[in-house]
Structures are given as structure tokens and as C-alpha cells.
Image (cartoon, rainbow, N blue to C red; front, top):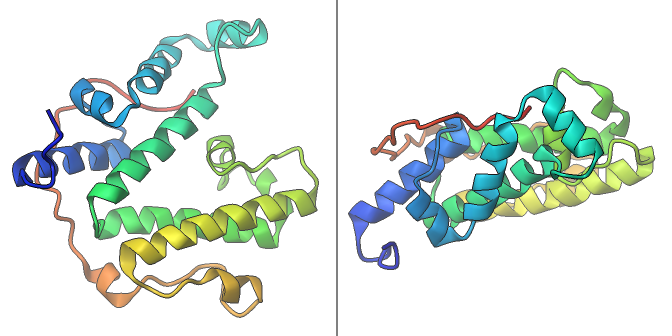
Length: 204
């Protein structure tokens, strides 16, 4: 159904819009798109876990009946981001702003690894998404955050065409919060199709 996205602009915009709103507003993704990109199972599993009450989820986690919802959500989110970024060559500014905030947090953790205990600004879901172990030593967490920073920074280079920040940042030249290129700051979203919400996609 979506094998001709390169030639069918309408379908392409439909898929881009669906992935975008899922990432930005936690809206549901049509099953046909999930099937096309191969994340149907994780998508179904996430919603099953999400429907469990807190007590039931805790009990089933303790007995090993269900996986960690944060790990499922992180895996699903990374897959959707990859699909969206590969399809939407130049993502709209709100998406870049969101990812820029995550880049900032990774830089903060790399510089101050004890900041993972700041539960207001750094959530467990964020740590799981970027492979940062809250129980590891400060030096290990710093290395984990640096690795994640470099990977996300490389994605920014591809999405915006800007120069990489990682080397200068980790040499102490750049501030924690990088500044997006002027064109990226001014770019308006080109998302025109807004899918109807069918449910929710939030962590427990």
C-alpha cells in the first residue's frame, strides 16, 4: 500500500503527517503504516501494557509476564523517529526543537552525570530511550550520555545540514544548549494532514 511513497506525494504526506503527530502529540498511527514500517507488534504491545492498571502492571512485571513498558516505548519511539526522519528530509521546526531539547539534556548528563536524579527535568523514559543507566557510576553514565549525544548530533547534521557540535562540545568549547541554524529556526511545518486520534500513547 505504501510501496510507492517516492512517486505518490499524497501518500507520502499522509505517512509523514501520521508519524509526525504520533511523535509530537502521541496520536495513534494507522495499522497499515505500522505494518509497512514493521513496528506493528511493538505498537500493539505498548497499547496492551498501557491499558493495564498500575497494580496489575506492577504485579505482572514482578512475575515476568510482561516486559518493561518504558523499554517498549523507547524501542517504538526510536523506530518511528527513524522512519519519520528518513521520509521527511527536512523536519519542521517544532520537531527539531523537541529533539534539540533532548540533545541539551544529553549534554547536561554527560557534563553532570549526577543530574539523572533530577526527576523534574529528566524522566526515566528519557534515560531508557537513550540507554543511560541511572544505577551506573557517574563516569559510566557520562560515557553513555556522550555516546547518545554524538548519535543524535549526527542525526541533526543530516536533518539540518549544520556542522556537528559533538567534538567541540566535549572539548568544552560549546555551551550545553546548541543553537539551531537560522533556517531551521524559521522553517514552518509542512504537515498538512492531521490524523484523527484513536487513543493515547503515554507511559505509565
